Length: 563
Image (tube, rainbow, N blue to C red; front, top):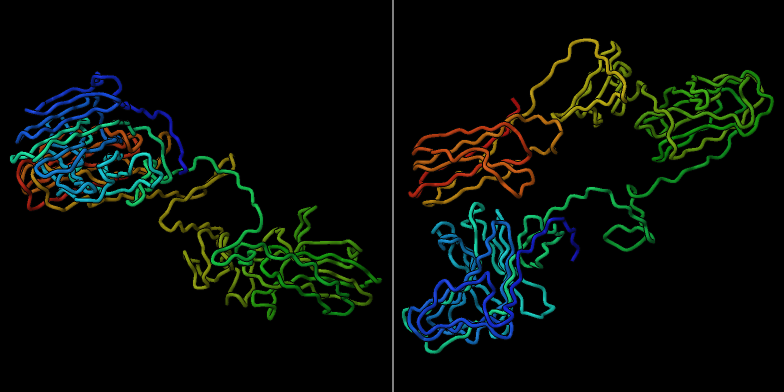
């Protein structure tokens, strides 16, 4: 499975229960009548006994905050009625948790459940590897979700995601502990069960690897993670590129370079004699003289066509050596090897060179269409627009008699154009206009008008919440790195409910570690509270905590404001 490893991964511990005593980080919080805890042969064994209502809890003192990953490698000697075996992560009070609950008599069944401050999700019954032999049972927890996954030990089978929760999950502001808990029911189980814990792993994921597919191997539940490529990787073609569907050599037009053509030489030996050629999708075309036969009075003029060669308008020759633009080539310049580029506009399909002056003799000319592009003409002909030339588009395809828009009636994308009066016009389509002056001085003759940046608001939630429920709004990204200018000045949050609660704003440099940007602020019943903080980092979110009464009305909103 491909992975990109990020520094600062911290694996807190792996406990293999070697020796004959519990590791120093593990302790027995409670031991029920007729129950026992022992360590031997790298296994911690809890004997459940047959005493009704007996409970034994063994807890690891290492604590973690969300985000983390845990694994239990466990087997049970039997599955029996009137008994629960919990593999769990829990806060100190046991009111917020994520856990497996092995109950009932089916060896391939387990319940997964989460709870937050005493309000619990309904347990989900799922299929798991048989508990008659060792299996791995994983819990992955972060601020957005809790995912349960499992697989038989020492198996090459893919680990299966068996349950996931995204509400009533672990609170990122609390500490959590690993523990194994065995509870006999009010009716005593018929016989004793041995719970064998081979290993327990606890790993802090704050700086863990970023996986193209989640690194814990979960496959059934979608868990792809975004990856930002910081450097462009080198790529080398091997063999012939193909395009799906099909498996033949690539002939897709937009993936292949157009064929360059070296036209047939044509002798111009009369007035209005001409040679014409098609661009066929290439970007440049030029002319070369291959032979002369005492030409007298010959004048060569270039033309271009937008309609497949039916109508032509005059264009210009270009001399790349002297960087000159020429309307015509006069007789005195004609010699074997004489060459010029021909300026073409966007949308041009054909060009021609015509003898607009001639007395006698001839000049043989060849046109070559290639992917090498010279200068592009900024003037178009009247047949493309009724009164072309009034507006010349710097980014666009033709000249127009009326001011262009974002997309003109001719289908040309236009963002920058100049008028014959000297005005420069910019249509940024509501985006950002950037000007690169090449390191020199940018001069503006006239008035510069600035427009305030965009403000944006978000409806985080209007769902009525349970007593003591926590609502964490979506992360809002200013979308620029530290030290970079941006348009926003403040992040704002407002909260309303028909019962009392509290509201705060949190901020983060990395969208992983969150700090409080404001104190918890009381929100009275049927009152609206607004909070605002200046933009000091990249990520912000709102957190609303309901009071002890169920809501019937709720609203949480946030916004990023530029002024």
